[in-house]
Image (cartoon, rainbow, N blue to C red; front, side, top):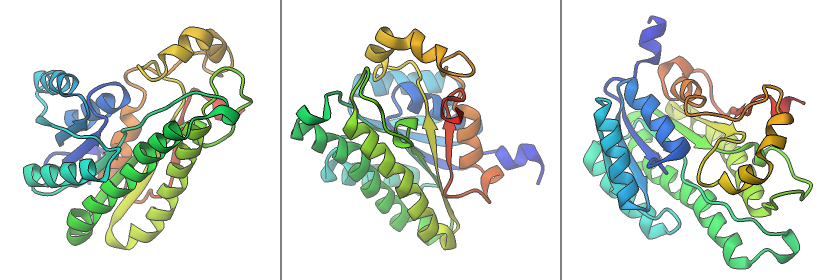
Length: 258
């Protein structure tokens, strides 16, 4: 197998949650460019339609399913529809997520539960469904979770206070490791990307306030851009990464190295 063949995704079927914009759409572009057929999932139909039109304009086969991954019913609906449309799933990218800022002592319970449901429970239920119904029976799969450098460390409380986000992303980190151990014998790899700060709808308020400070504390003196996750995502989702599992890769300009 040549290196080009190892990274080739022609014939692979992929589900990308939170794929209508931001980091999810960036990863969808990368997988589609390498030949994968895509189903994008998100809550808002207009954004999904725009994303699908964008991808199709690049020659990528893509379709959309509107789904709320914060509820078991939404997850079940997505799993049923996606597997019906694709036939099976080779690649699952768990990117959908939410955040909420508040000091820990005042953190509202409804916000805490929302983040647990979207960032952890929905991720678990969808992975479970896709694994049990498609990947395990076929003896092949690539699961790529989106964690965060916020899940690798705590914070001082200066700036945004995101205790639930940090906690759930820390859960994604060890979910990745634990599932890699369980599902390795089935030929399924499970890895995670841990992005640093990338401009997005979720991070915009923080970057407006302290973006220059964040760049100054980053060894590469920059934020992530619209290309920076693509290579790593293709590595983990292709045969080029067939002997990599249970790993968490920080893509953060060096922030966690110092």
